[in-house]
Length: 385
Image 1 (cartoon, rainbow, N blue to C red):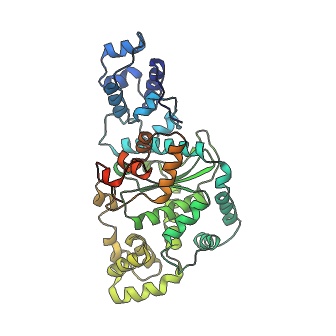
Image 2 (tube, rainbow, N blue to C red):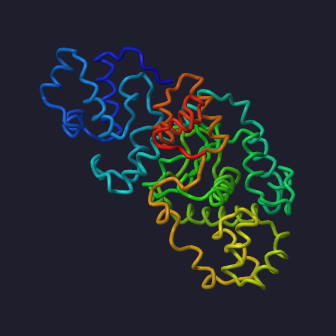
């Protein structure tokens, strides 16, 4: 766990070396990019003089790491090879490059997952692992089998909130994060350390869209992402341009399964009536409000049910969620209770609020409010509840 007790010059030197390896740079090159003078570097290395706090903050900003990283023994739970996967030519200062933000996103989420893996026992996630085994032993539609296993009735919509409540009870860790915005990512799932199922969703999309993201990533965990620890203890394809034909096919399957989970075939008759009265686009938007599912997901099901064609519903997919969000959390998006529980769990285990803010991408005010350490009306950024 990160601790902030009396950092020594030797510790700071060691952390600078770790950060440099993550970035694929020499230590001197990283310090030069951070604006450290040769005299400051010499004082730290030869005279064992602690650098001024403002210089450490600059170093943290330049490297994309939290200040706490340089003041604690905590090690980033990801290898340099994975950290730089697919982006070997990205300079640390190229902050306009989406690959830069994808790399930083991987780092933050791996750190958050590792903190959780330290605080959660394997026994707590065994129910979900058993659910996965059970579904694999049966033949049939995975979406249908999942709803039956969770006891969710097909016409008992909205299904999204019930799905999240059910799988979190089984041990799945669902985190809503603000670090996805500039990386143009909506969701990601993986088994951390080979045993902990993680789903991370962006706060830059609507709550209805987030339900689809959770269902999509859940199908990955249940069908094509195997638990088990590899050499890095971190299993996933984290950046979009690493995906090959196999991964793209898995994405399409997960999309289809997620739509079937949130909108089972029993809803088809209702959809037929609404589309017949309102037309495909207006009907999809009306059903989106009734079912609490994104209009895009509804459009996908309308095509499946042959109630609409792709050209008819294409308008539902433009502009993108991120074009509307402009890299900011969606208006009115408050931190879901499960994420607040995760923040409180980690905070009580010794993780600082500042570290949690960095790892999740939520503002410090947002984290302090969620921890009950700050009243919403006292928040300088006027956090929405």
